[in-house]
Image (cartoon, rainbow, N blue to C red; front, side, top):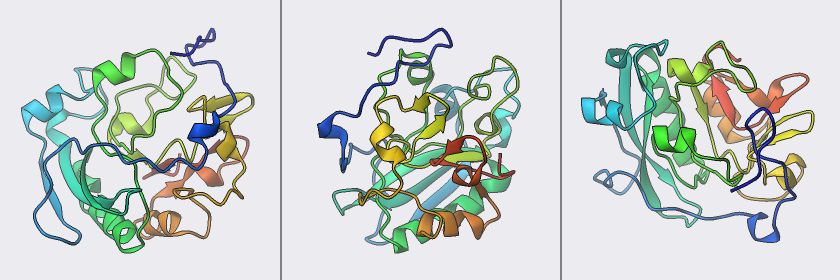
Length: 224
């Protein structure tokens, strides 16, 4: 665990050597989808899936409007894996299209599971790297106003290789080595690369294009 600052985030530390050129693949959170190529499953999110997410009454999207999306992806080990996302129903088909394109491009993902309440409330460790969508939380650094993640209309992809940076703040807090976007390392999202192109094809904007702050992991339906 990292010591925390007054705003509740962890203290930024230099990236340990073991976390540079990170290329791990963690166990899947759901059973593997059938087949050998890309596969997907979309359904209205079952109650038990909602129950292990951060959804609660007062979130800006109804639980009934969230879809449970399972897709296959390439791990950093080069193998076929299956992950899960919670997204607002209107975005479900588009996200299948995006991750099909990332599969075809052999873009690696470390892990993909639904953010739990325990994870959202845990003290910061600074090394998280979960590709995820729905998370009922405010905008970073604010106590009011919901993030696009809280609507199920945003996704963060490989956040350790693609951190958030605003002034002295870096999230994950141990990922500052990756702020040099010229690094030759797997999982880095670039303006001319396949991840940005896949999301642009469905009309989603990239946080790496923002002025002032950079959110290289982040894609959202409204570009914010």
